[in-house]
Each structure stands twice: as structure tokens, then as C-alpha cells.
Length: 93
Image 1 (tube, rainbow, N blue to C red):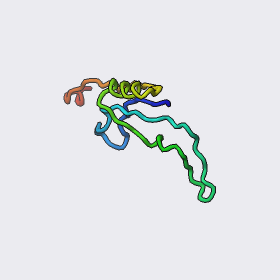
Image 2 (cartoon, rainbow, N blue to C red):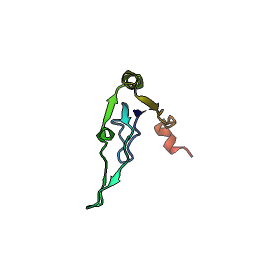
Image 3 (cartoon, rainbow, N blue to C red):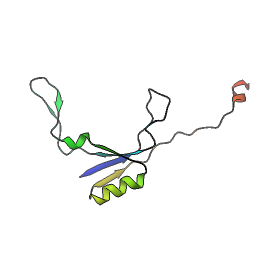
Image 4 (cartoon, helix red, strand yellow):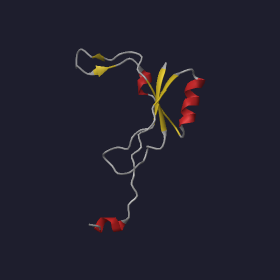
């Protein structure tokens, strides 16, 4: 079974960084989705797709995946480059 290990990005809707410090292990879908004939909704019989496990460190997530013999795809986070600024820099010309 294939799993994806990543650290989620900061949401664009808020300025806070809550929930972006932990690593997430997410199962890749094994069975494709289908369109339900009566209502036209998208459905799936794969319930593992809904499972998301959170870990404090990347090493814990990788250890969990290797212990259960999952094929892990680790995605490193893209961290923004933050330039240090001071309040006085706002008034420079």
C-alpha cells in the first residue's frame, strides 16, 4: 500500500500557523471513484482514503510506515524565505 508523508502548508484564509508543525501520513486511494447513478455524486468504496494520521516528526511517520510495510512517498515542505525587518524600515525612502 502506498502512503504519502508531508507537512501541510499554512492555510491562505488565516495568518496563523496552527496545524502546520505536524507531519501527516495519508493513504493513497487503491480503488477509483465512481459517479453515483441516481444523484450524480462522486463516491468511493475505499475507506482508507479518509484516514489521516498526524505525527510530531517526520522520522516518526517514516518509522510507522516502514513498520507496517507501507511504500512511503515523503514530500519535503517548501518553507518561505523570511527577510528580517525592523519597524524603522517602514519609514526609509
